[in-house]
Image 1 (spheres, helix red, strand yellow):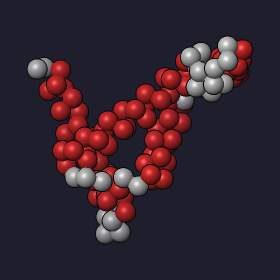
Image 2 (cartoon, helix red, strand yellow; image 1 turned 90 degrees about the horizontal axis):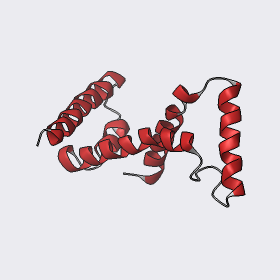
Image 3 (cartoon, helix red, strand yellow; image 1 turned 60 degrees about the horizontal axis):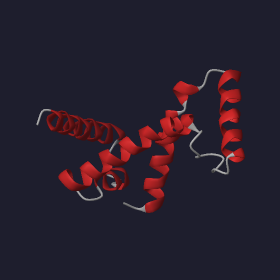
Length: 115
């Protein structure tokens, strides 16, 4: 899949992962504390081991990458890119297709757990 397209989707999923964490000034103070611990310990300020909120937020992006890999391997290589870039596809068609692929992905993951 085209790098900039994929990177944009992954970044979006990471940012969405922060939404449940936001609870006013408590979130800000706690995040700053985590970033400060990273700096003091010589870690990357944003993604160091003390940045638990960052790691939690990244779970959505990681799940998206698994979903995209499933589409590439089981449905169609570059399926998401092709779906979004096809000018003939309406928004309804894109949503319908993603819903169908997501159901297949979830069933596939559920079946893996039963093996």
